[in-house]
Image (cartoon, rainbow, N blue to C red; front, side, top):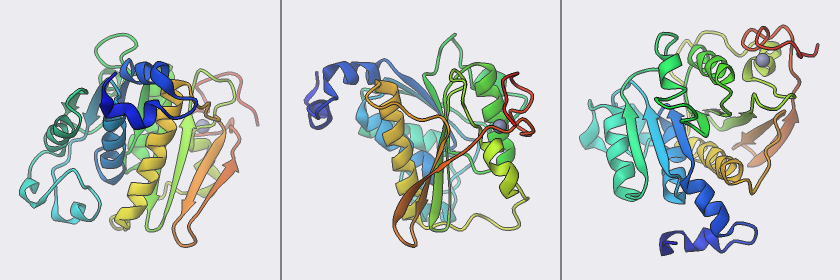
Length: 255
Ligand SMILES: [Zn+2]
């Protein structure tokens, strides 16, 4: 085992077994913005075996307060191309690939399952629109792939793990339904770079736990970060039969 991973392999409860599980894992990261940069960085440096990055955007100047895989020299270039190069440089053992496209209903059934059966151990939602997230959730559920959602705005963020293989899953739509948070955006998302870094790091930490089996993730918890008072809290969520995202995906929905 490479000394590169010494500091985590020697953690109590981790060990070579967990590291090998990480090396045998493959993840799809949807979006390489503020969250995606942090997730791709920490998962690749931790030693995830394969990683695919998906984003159709180009680097802009306003990205550079938080999207630390890019520099001013990258402005106007494909985010995915730049991010793949950055990951290859900092984690040369990871097999990293890129899909230079936004996730849409037209390509989701190709992008999310990958090119082989069982391609991805987990999908990470680092997207920035509810419409794209809805497509990601529905496609992951259709292909039975665990999905870890993250979102952030200003000083706040949230993380939600959705494993369609577990009966008590709650999807983002179930949670947002009551909050009516899917209203159209009237301006770009304002966000502090550190907020994206913290929430992306929470996602990476939870993903490592789930991929290695060192930590069981609860399916019906929303983890909320509040940077105004530096608190992380947990909310219980319940599946909604009237959910616009998962309401018609299964027969075991609860009211
Ligand atoms: Zn739902």
